[in-house]
Image 1 (cartoon, rainbow, N blue to C red):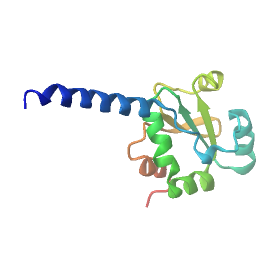
Image 2: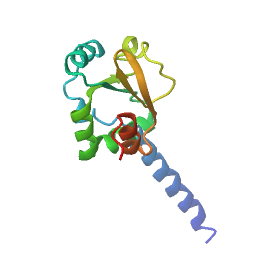
Image 3: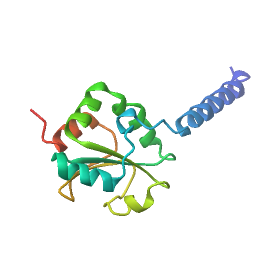
Length: 141
């Protein structure tokens, strides 16, 4: 058993490293954001349609962001809720810093519901995302 301990330790370290590398790889932008509109364009669409804007503030280096993009934001029910009730906007740290600076962003990932030019709801992280989004949009039973 003592002779196997170094081998087991090496295997565990290697497995941990592989897991870390896989989590660090950025998830693709969820399809619900395929329209790729800016916050200014969304504000105009919101004014015309009456729908609030849903802004996802995310970063490629953020592991919880990648989990949110791979998990809840691929759920057909969540996608339907977003497309039916909001104008979705995807803002990535780095590429969209100026737009992100207009929001009360404190951590990633954060989802903002913006209605009439003001933030009406904020969802931090991705735990319980579907229920949190339902509450933020006033859709809960």
